[in-house]
Structure formats: structure tokens, C-alpha cells
Length: 205
Image: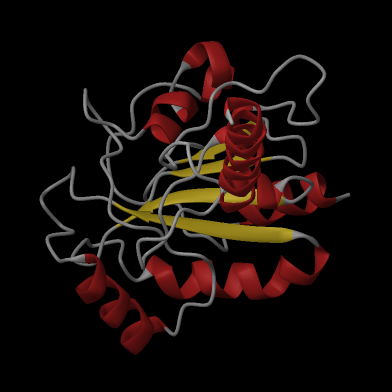
């Protein structure tokens, strides 16, 4: 009798393990930052290891932008530089077909100039500027609670001379096709300033 039961239990266990694997059970909760890629991984930059949430709350892996030139900007809806949304959109439209993307990260760190919810931010940006480039959920970009992505971008050991704290809204980090920070532009510099467009064009070649 027992010899008939044990094989049945074993087969049931095998099927259960197989089904759990297909369903992804036990894989863990998706976080904003994946572990460092193992040696031999194609992901050569820590920039691509992050999964911040988009404006609708869904994790978006930055690895999807590998091979593209990326401008990372911390944005705000009530800043004197909020008008820059318009030229960030123009810059994106000008170069997107060549492999360029703008990533906007709302943050309320400076002057409390991004007080709204993600839904309010999305409504404002869409109604006022018709933004098409990716916009993410509101995060902190400075201090102890800074999002891991910004901890990485501002770390001099990672970004070299372009590291250092973000001090105001609309600070711009330019990331090359390999995920390396190659330039940083101050809040007051408009997105269509020749210094930015020339740097973008050089990175796209």
C-alpha cells in the first residue's frame, strides 16, 4: 500500500514545483532597484539596474533604455522653471527617432514645488504641455530618502565630476548609450540651450 502512495506524493510535489515556477511564485516582490548584475551580465552600468515606478505606479526597468541617450530631469509643477517642460518635449521630439529619450522625475524636495499626487501631476503635465516622454512617480532626489537612482547619479564614485547633490528642480543629467553620465546641466539652463543640444548630438553619433 505504502509503495503506491509514495510515488503519487512525489509526482504531486514535482507538479507543484513546476507550476510555481511557471507562475513566478516565490520570485519576490519587484523593487525599485535590482541587485547588481552578476559578472558576465550584459548590463554594464548600474543605471540600467533600476526599476522606478512610472507616473501610473508601474515598475519600469531602465534597462529598456540601454543603447539610447538619456536626459534625466527632476521636474516640478510650481517652479519658476516649470516652463521648461515645453522645451524638454521639443528636445525629445527632435531627437527621439535617433535614439534619445527624456525621463522626468517629479520631486517635492525644493521649495515644496511639487505638492500634488501622481494623478494630479499627470493631469497638469498632459493638459498644459502634452508631454510624450516618460514621466515617473514622485520621488525624493536629495537627502537620506533620495531614491536609489538619484543616490547613484549624485555619487561622485559613479558619476565622477558630474556627481554631487541636486540643489534645485530641473537639474539635468545626460547619460550616454552605455549608461555613463557624460554631462550635467544646471536648473536655469533651458533644454534647447546649444550646450545641451550639442552634447545630445555628440552622444548620438
